[in-house]
Image (tube, rainbow, N blue to C red):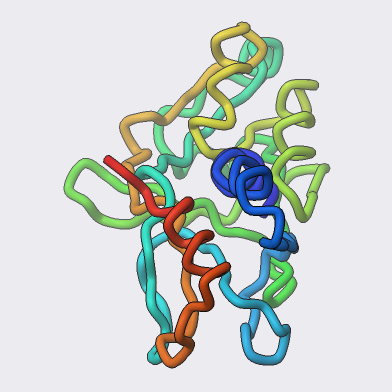
Length: 198
């Protein structure tokens, strides 16, 4: 996804390209789960460290949090939801997952750690995260977005968070690749550059 490319992959790999002229990198954005073998990709990126058998997972980013945000003007008119279930009475900006075409169910957690999934409705739906953010800033409804992505808009007063008590941290981006694959020297350079350092 473009968020991973912009915030983690490209910032860490840009210096690699300058330092190692023989290393070539192609970054492909796809919100679905890609079969690495059939796509001829060396590695993939996803949230969390859960991967299928025969794969190695390596953390490349910090823990993440998805937060619900809206424009101040939106909250002035529609009010502020107090619990995730209140979202069914709000206009929400949807994200359609390319894996199976379904709309992303918004995930929250109650104070006891129980998962709460809410299917939201709204006029706008996108298949990448940046237009979701833009629509929220423009006042078209609430959006569920990574907190690091929303931070500049919140700091500027264009967005306000809500339901923060229901938004726990979860394992951030991990790189995954086949365990049977012996990393080439170029791929090892990429792995070393991407490895998350606490």
